[in-house]
Each structure stands twice: as structure tokens, then as C-alpha cells.
Length: 99
Length: 190
View 1 (cartoon, chains in turn purple, cyan):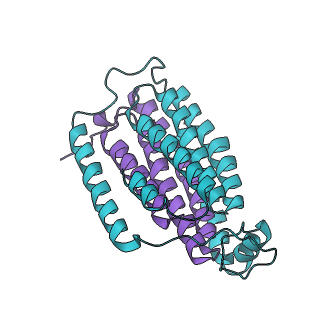
View 2 (tube, rainbow over the protein chains, first blue to last red):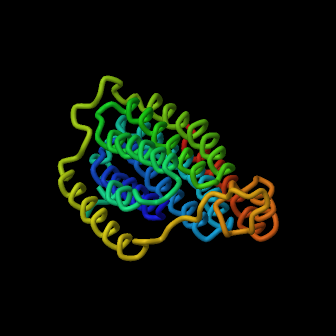
View 3 (tube, rainbow over the protein chains, first blue to last red):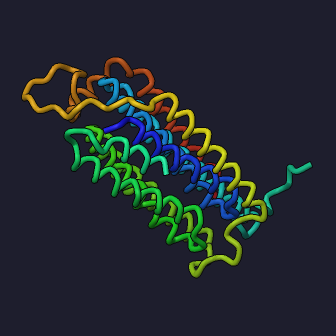
């Protein structure tokens, strides 16, 4: 198999995730798009690890999975706090710090 | 698009036909599901499509010989994170029937950014790794390390984590503790 098959797949997932982060209004959907981005990085790491024949890529993928779990926990807590204060998770309305 | 080009360029490879077909099918499912995740109006449907993307990634890890990462992906992502997302959807009372406007007004800008990003990534990947091939799958019983693609055992990964990467591992456990306490503090009603 070509290495590029996996890299192109990861690039497609990354671009879709960036689109989701920029254009979604619901805070939960933005977090889901961030998960897409993290997964594309994981695919890249494991593919490069297989290419070079060592385990470093897989170990870092495991670390990224752990960090992603922590990130989702804190992120959803923030979204819930926003919802409790404003009765909405629409990110367009969260603009208190806009100049 | 790039996937098709890469698969076509690989068509004359002597072996690995089954793996290439599996890769193509799973990759197509993953890209379609990821597209639906960022475009569907229904948040619950988006979560289900996210499950398909994450399971597809686990399948790709198996294709790459990373079994432990694949199982961890299924356990942590599909088992825990998606459930967390469903709880988040439930607690924020997002309309199950779909929202009136799922995207903000500047979504063409986001689409433009994503297209430019995909184009640049595709160009640089073609330039940088155009002909690189993954090692063949191992056929002999006791292969030389790194000479062929063999399923890396859980024992080797645990050896690496608990020797070379011990300090990052401990830092990760501290990070998880901090995230746990932080999530409780932020989401607590007081």
C-alpha cells in the first residue's frame, strides 16, 4: 500500500473538520469537528509509524486519544456552563468579548 | 479525489489487493460520514455518523498493524466520547428534529478555507511522499524488526510506554485528573 493513501484520507478528514469548526453554530457540533481533526492526526501518526517500523507513532496516537478524552470532558462542561447561563449553545450569541 | 489517484497509481502493485480494496471501501465510508458530520442538521445523526468515522479509523489502524490502538480507539472514542456527546446533546436540549440554521452565515468562507487547506495538503503530500510505499505484510514467522509490516504486539507497546515514554505517561494521568476536576468545577451548579 502507498503511504499516501492514508495521508490523503487524513488530509480529507482534517479539511472537513476545519470546515465544521468554522461553520457550525452549535457548540457540541464544533467539538465533534475537533474530534475529526484529532482522528486525522492519529491516522497520520500510525501510518508514519508503520512506514518507519517503530512503535513511537502508535504510542503518540494513544497519548492523543487520552488528551482527546480530557478535551471533550472539559469542552462539554464549558458548553453546559454556556447553556446554563444563556439558555442556548449557539456560538454566534457568545460574543461578550467581541470588540 | 486524491484517494482515487493514489489507489490507481497503486493498481499495478503485485500483492495486497485485498488490503487496498478494504482501504478504499473504508476510506469512502469515512469521508462520506465525515462530510455528513459537518453538514447534517440533526445533531443526533451527526453523533451516529461520527461513530462511523471513528470505527473506520479503528479499521484503518488494523490495516496498519496497530491492533492495540484500534481497540483503544473503539473503547475510548466509540465507547466513552460518543456517549459523552450524546449526553451533551441531551443536556443542552438541542432540537432532535433538526435546527433551522445549522451553519452560521459565513459558511462559504469556511468551505473556502477547507478547500484551500485540502488543496495545499494534497499538493505537498503528493510532492513529499508521492512514491513512498508501506512495507509489505510479514509472511515469515520470525521477521526482522522493521523490515516488514507485522501486527505490533500489545507487549511491545506496553514496554515502550512504561520505559521510554514513562514520564509522558505519568503527565497524561495528571492531565486526566486535572480535566476531571476542571470539568466538575466548570459544570457544577452553585
